[in-house]
Image 1 (tube, helix red, strand yellow):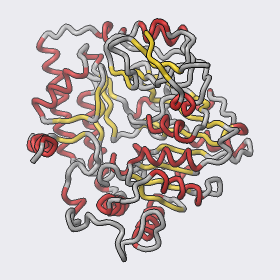
Image 2: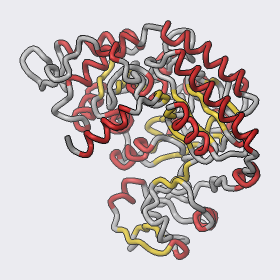
Image 3: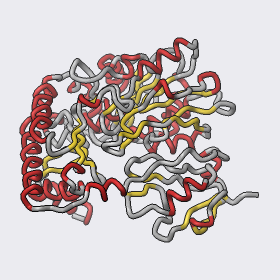
Image 4: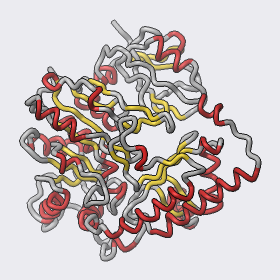
Length: 474
């Protein structure tokens, strides 16, 4: 076995308790009866074709549409990213119109701008001061140019489980008599069925809705669904876009896992027992940590909070989040979804069990007690000062597509004022780009980058050398 296989084997043998994707959490029960070698097939007689289904794939997609409340559902075997990209390529009138997108959208949305050539009209999320993360979105403070854009693309919920008042956006469109499609990245809310969770974007009336079915449901990694309803989306164009983007050799294992994930999504009892344990966790460790909860609804643009995303902030303890992560991994075998300098996200999936949450509760209690009794002298103030403030939006000179294909060169960052930036740079957290390729370097953005310390920077190729890619003009 090679290095990759050995690495996977070593990791699996450690037996970590999963609070990360995929949602099946390695439970065999979701895959009983699936012959992983025998079912690794290609498009053969009787097995249908993904890009022009009329048999078993068509029936599986039809059943999934019924479960999730769509008029039509498309299985995706290139991940949720391809769903966001197909949304943009499906749109019409893109040569004269732009598209509304959240500045904090997933990076696949930014790549969709490059593929489609659409010029973005950005709307800003609300940064929560306790977490320094974009957890809210205030529709009333946004000015959506309904008549001059090809579509409005939003995220519902975000990575951390908070969601804005999507119904207000849909109501505004109706009130103004607009026919502009509303596209929703619901990648992290594919489990939004039944009374335990917020209403799905399909239920509220969105036109195109993406589900990353592997994140919280039981589908295999890289499996997703794209749902469509209503007359605003051209179905032939959507099919053509997916054929352009997806593999011509689809994995039948991924397809079969999607079919099963839809059926398992109706098993609401799997979530009910988890909710009780999450409430107990919040009660026991909420004094030591800042935990996102239902108490945050109605503040900073947050309309709903998904309890299955456990977001904790370690600043009340004065400890960097990574110390807590190390403690939980080493002492309790707990693997979170992600962490930054002060936040840790524990993501539940349909495969989690109540004892998993009890283990997490015990680990967090133990860590809080350890910090308080060990005389740790971490500085809350110092950690807060390391936060990056997102500057005002720079002027957009070129579309992301134009900037992507333009000739570029690298120059010292300190000499970049006034130049058109040729890369997209985002600090994490909060994950909102300070500059997107095609925008002009401003004094405010330059000052932010020049004073940036060590951190998690996405897309900045020359952080170490303090250089930046710019578009060659003329």
